[in-house]
Image (cartoon, rainbow, N blue to C red):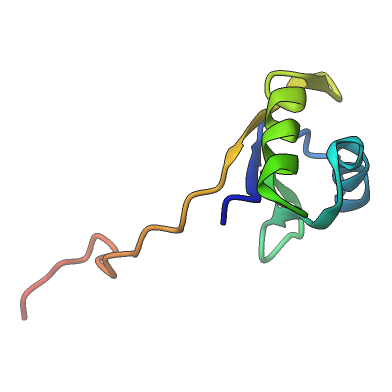
Length: 95
């Protein structure tokens, strides 16, 4: 998990191949994924990049965090595990 990165503040036009190209100078990019809306396919403005090693991930963070790409300053940091959802969707009714 030390080599999986969260990439935020992406331009809505950024695609996975472009994301991979931005990270390639810092080492082997095992995967690059831009998260999209399920219904429309439109980018959500963030994604994940998995680097080949923790050292390469740290190099990418140092090299790209705050760097402006497509007019937006990227947020790049280590990805955290997804927090479990409660399952309460605001209804919380007792019948």
